[in-house]
Amino acid sequence: MNVLERQIIQQLNPYIKTYFSAVLLYFVPFYLSLVQSFQPYQTSIPNGYNVPHPCKLNYMWRGVGHQVPKGGGERNQFGIDFSNAGKSWTVDFCQKDSDGDGKTNGEELGDPQCKWKVGELPERTTNITHPGICEPLDSEQCMNETQFVSCDSKQFLCDALHEPAIRGMKNTTIKFPEIKILNEETQYYCMYFNFPMDGDYHMVANQPFIDNKNVLHHILLFGCDQPVTEEPNKPWRCGMGSYKCFSLLGIWAVGMAGECMHNLTGFRIGYRGYTTGMIQVHYNNPDKRDDFTDSSGLTIHYTPNRRQYDSRVLMLGQMYLEIPNGKNEYQVIGECTPECRRQMKVEHIRNGTFLEDIAVDEVYSYDSPVQHQYVLKPYIP
Ligand SMILES: *[C@@H]1O[C@H](CO)[C@@H](O)[C@H](O)[C@H]1NC(C)=O
Ligand SMILES: *[C@@H]1O[C@H](CO)[C@@H](O)[C@H](O)[C@H]1NC(C)=O
Ligand SMILES: *[C@@H]1O[C@H](CO)[C@@H](O)[C@H](O)[C@H]1NC(C)=O
Ligand SMILES: *[C@@H]1O[C@H](CO)[C@@H](O)[C@H](O)[C@H]1NC(C)=O
Ligand SMILES: *[C@@H]1O[C@H](CO)[C@@H](O)[C@H](O)[C@H]1NC(C)=O
Image 1: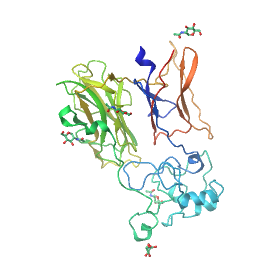
Image 2 (image 1 turned 135 degrees about the vertical axis):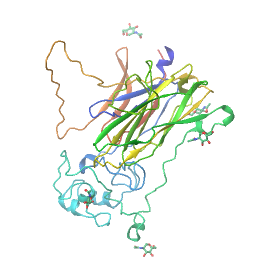
Image 3 (image 1 turned 180 degrees about the vertical axis):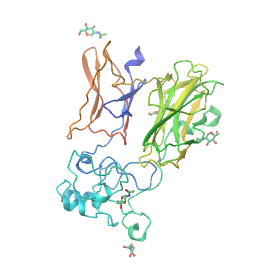
C-alpha cells in the first residue's frame, strides 16, 4: 500500500514495567520532527526522573538543574551546585540546601542520609520535592527566588479545536462514574462505552478530564475489535490487558495536555468505524490511602468533516511470553544490573535496507514517558 510508505510515527514510552515499547504509526505524507531534549544527568542524582513540578498537575521537572522543566538554558541554584560538585552526588552537595527552603538536597530527593550511589534504589521514592525550587512558592522567603517557575497550565495547542462549529466539530467526555480507590499501591479500572453512532466520524483529538490528580497515573483509550456484550459505562477492576479492544486510540500520561492528530488523519468512529471503546485508568496510591475516589476520563473531539486518511496504530514490543507445550514449569528471567539504563530504539528497515532511526530513547522512565511525533521521509523506489 502506497500510503504505508509515508508515515507519521508517534512513539510513546512503555506503560508496562519492562522493556516494552509502543509505537503509533499514523499514515501521512509529510516530513516533520519534534526534537526532544534529553537529560543525561538524571541518573547521577537520586530520583532524578522523579522530580515533580511544584505547581503543575502530575508534571515532572525533567531538567532538575535547569530553570525550565524540559532542561537546557539557564541553571537553577541546584544545577550550579551540581556543577560545582563535579556533577556527582557528593555528601557535601547532598547536605546542601541549594534552594534555601530549609530542606537539604538529600531530603528533597529521597536520600536524607546522603548514602545513595549511582544505580542504587534511593531510601525513599515517594514524597520527592524539587531541590532547586524554594517551596512553598508563594512564601515571602521564596518569592524572589522562584520567578522562573511558571504555574500556568500547559496549553493544549490543536488547530482542530478552533474549527468553526459550522464544520461540525463535536466533543464528548468519557469518564468513570465516581469510583472508590482501594488502599492498594497500584490498580487498574476499565469501562466499556459506546462511541457516538449518529454519524461517520474522525476522532482528531483528546484531552484529559482529571478528577483526582493524587492518584491518576495514566489513561488509555481503546477501540474494540470484538463484539462487546458487557454493559457500557460500568467500571470494573481490570489488569493492564486490552480485553476485546486491541486498538489504542488515545493516551494520557503525566505531563500531557492532550493529543492532537496530524491534520490529514483521524481515527474512524461511529457507524462506519469503531462503535465500542474501552477506557482504562491506572491509579497509583503509594501511601495506600483509603479515602480517595475518582471520576477521571478523556474528552474526545470528533468531526464528520473527515480527514484524508484513517489512522492506524502499530504497537511494538514484548507483548506476551510464549510458554512451551507440556511444561509444568517454565521460567523466564529478566535482569537489570544496577548500572543498566533502560533504552529503546526503533529502526526503519525496508527489504533488508536500513532507512533511518524512527525513535531513539537513550533514557526511559516509566513515570515520565515522552512522546515523539514524526512523519517519515516519503519512499522513493
Ligand atoms: C517528606 O519529606 C520530608 C523531607 O523533604 C520529610 O521531612 C517528611 O517527613 C516526609 N514525609 C513523609 C510522609 O515521608
Ligand atoms: C525580594 O525583592 C524585593 C525587590 O527586589 C526586595 O525589596 C525584598 O527585600 C526581597 N525579599 C527577600 C525576602 O529577599
Ligand atoms: C465541547 O463542545 C461544547 C459545545 O460545542 C463547547 O461549548 C465546549 O467548550 C467543548 N468542550 C471542550 C473541552 O472543548
Ligand atoms: C495541515 O498542517 C500543515 C502543517 O503541518 C499546514 O501547512 C497545512 O496548512 C494544514 N492543512 C490544513 C487543511 O489545515
Ligand atoms: C528487495 O531486494 C531484492 C534484492 O536486493 C530485490 O531483488 C527486490 O526487488 C527487492 N524487493 C522490493 C519489493 O523492493
